[in-house]
Length: 378
Image 1 (cartoon, rainbow, N blue to C red):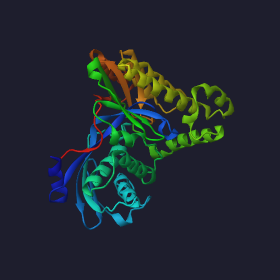
Image 2: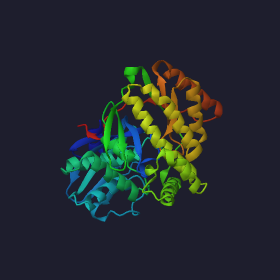
Image 3: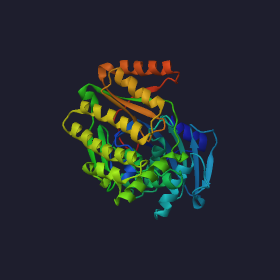
Image 4: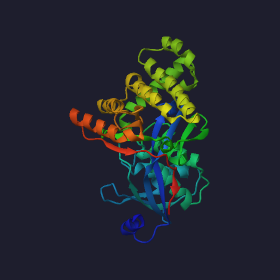
């Protein structure tokens, strides 16, 4: 099917098919750009790329979710700000590879996705990672998964205009099936932690609130700048370096608007530690209170939730979820809810009913399954 669509758009046969997944972050939100800890899983839902090399230096891009037009770019004239829209990320990946000294040329790339856009599931990171994976194989690059993630991150920073940390790209590139990725974002140390909820009669529901978010609107950048300013005022390399027992004294030294940001980052890093301890102990149900506490911190200290995500959390808990929180940067997007398997239908119904009563669009719901990072599928 995907090869057939490539042939319809470009003519001739592709050289391969690649996929890069979206992600949900179990815990560790807004900690990655503070050199902290994160704990994401990759999803089954992904961005797929069908591609082949070109020898004329042209990058031709087509998206099944786009406007039906074929984009054509010259790889020797790719510059930030000159390319707008979704094509800026694939173009950015190619340019970042070229700047790093990789000898890469053009390509024909057909893109398709079953990731909901704007749902806080890192569709943009998946797009960058799938193009990096395709180019790695097409041009036989020495580009391990973590290096590919850094390429995609830089493309999003420079070409996409979003000063994101590295978590989303590392999750899309480096996760393994059946595991959560414990990542130290300072040195990129990784540990794959078994995350097989079905064996414990648990499910992780993803509740897409249908509230779209745009990280390039400046709010995300302002939060990051606030965290960096706080670290500077405290004389720290990053907020990761503030220990929990030093939090109270640090808050006394900070302006009132920066204190809540610092409190969230410090307590969120601690929550990652609690989540990992629960998983290592074979007690994934122990994640529940950690998730709920994380949402309260994002809502009250970081202030990145919205009425729809707050309602989804409240309704899920009322219907029997063990814990729930928004996932992703915020400003809309999705909520995750940890539920016993026999309560999954009831939680879904409870959240849906609450949304209808509030006059909100019915949320999309699916079960998250920890899946593999970017890879070639054909």
